[in-house]
Image 1 (spheres, chains in turn green, brown):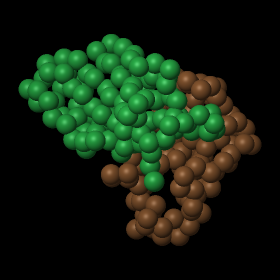
Image 2: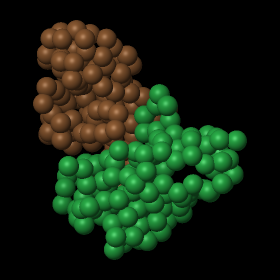
Image 3: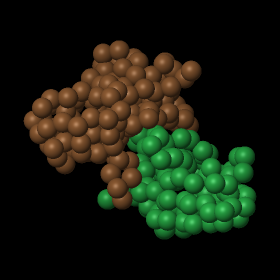
Length: 114
Length: 113
């Protein structure tokens, strides 16, 4: 079965609010995590990544938090905009696995309404 | 422009009729991979390649073949397509480095009747 999963399949937020998308993983050997955004009709696009030796990483309007104790990953989007509406996937790379292999979660559909 | 291209973007075919979906990247990436995306299942890896002439099975390789004769191309071959291979397919590429960003193509929507 999949070791990467999501708590919620859908998330609706109002424009301007902050969004939090969650991801749980079960493989303690996972040591690198990536968030992807997939807009309708397009391929996944890299948003932000984090190594397992970090707890937090910030990008432009996005922050990824990693809690290794409970094997939980979250993506926070500040001041959510209509253009943020998409499906968000977390993915992991596992220590000892072939370089480049990614394991994806099922995705969360984020809908931003005005 | 750095990109991963796939062709065709849409394909409707019938059971048993061999088809090939092409994938090409212009970023000199060593690593290339094929995924299928089905509702509720996320992306699942079919095959991947670490370099020319080096390919390996992913999580769902049954019914598919690949080849890597050139660094830039990684075609996906369905010798005898079946309806359960109806899906959205993505090709991706990256450098072979632990933290290398993986770039995805635009996708190929395949329907097998």
